[in-house]
Image (tube, rainbow, N blue to C red; front, side, top):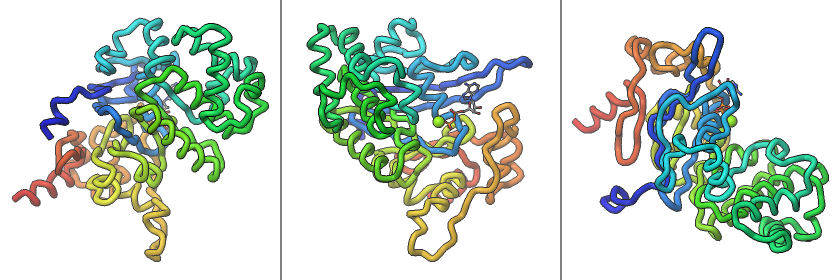
Length: 335
Ligand SMILES: Nc1ncnc2c1ncn2[C@@H]1O[C@H](COP(=O)(O)OP(=O)(O)O)[C@@H](O)[C@H]1O
Ligand SMILES: [Mg+2]
């Protein structure tokens, strides 16, 4: 434990807030997120669509859409606050120290440039290789990510590759300059099930070889339970529960996490129970309730939940949770 405390995390995000400009003022999309990623760790981020997972990741990379801006917070990565850097420095970090893989490789790859041109660009710009060396290294990277033919495929354009192959190219690009952090935002969501499994395996293979730390965003808790060390559960722009993968998947304390777990097909298999779904939708950030944002959908809602949002408090071990009912239950356990 003392060891963990004395170690500097690879990434420490504190009170991240992201706002959207509207005609009537600013709306908070991300409402104060703290995240810590230790070296070598895989941090899973889970939550339904629209909870601010991607917006949080884009803010770390400095590539938020124009309507959004980081309105407060810090994100210290390898000793520098990402939110205090010039765009030129962020561009350098994105290409070299932080790799990223998104859901749709078509939006990240340039359709009018060959794979080879796109792969060799970061190698020349960030790693300082010459044209020929970069081309040869690009070919080696393609082989490394399981694209047969390696160098001979470098003259292909993205549309000539299948979705799975394009995602392999994205992975090759993300690791070209040996980053220490990989941000994977739903990297397999757009792929068929067989390809999904292959891409997950590939990323884990690469992670081992390169000693990467990973933030893996997914709405699939079953997947995260297998690959993550720790999991943070996002709901309506904040973290509602965070803990080890074991704590989150086997003994969740927040009603939202509990609902996510009971809607997981794997958890229910063989128990003869009907799959539960969570009624309703996460709130629109412009119309977030004053109390707990999950209260309108929560089976354990009490009057106090509608008055003010609960704080994210330390619970057992590494766990933190933001729920009045869970806080009370934890206190009773201690008593
Ligand atoms: N380009 C954008 N312009 C304005 N609002 C956006 C944009 N992208 C996302 N948002 C808003 O940010 C919120 C969180 O979105 P997102 O981070 O994409 O969710 P998730 O990745 O968890 O599904 C949503 O309510 C969405 O309306
Ligand atoms: Mg997303």
